[in-house]
Length: 66
Image (cartoon, rainbow, N blue to C red; front, side, top):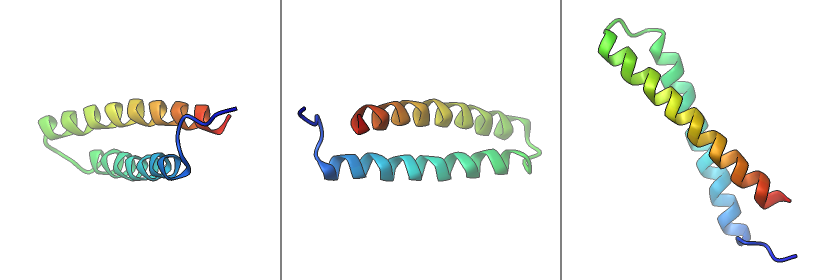
């Protein structure tokens, strides 16, 4: 079976997944400390976008591992 991506590309996807997880954790944590409603809304939206992006990356990694 032919791999659609090389090893370095697969590792880059894993690195991106780790980076996005860190950003999601930071936004989620900081959201609890923020008093400004507008900033809290921005962080909440960032958390949602981050979760969606991470889910897409995990699907991609799962497809690569098969």
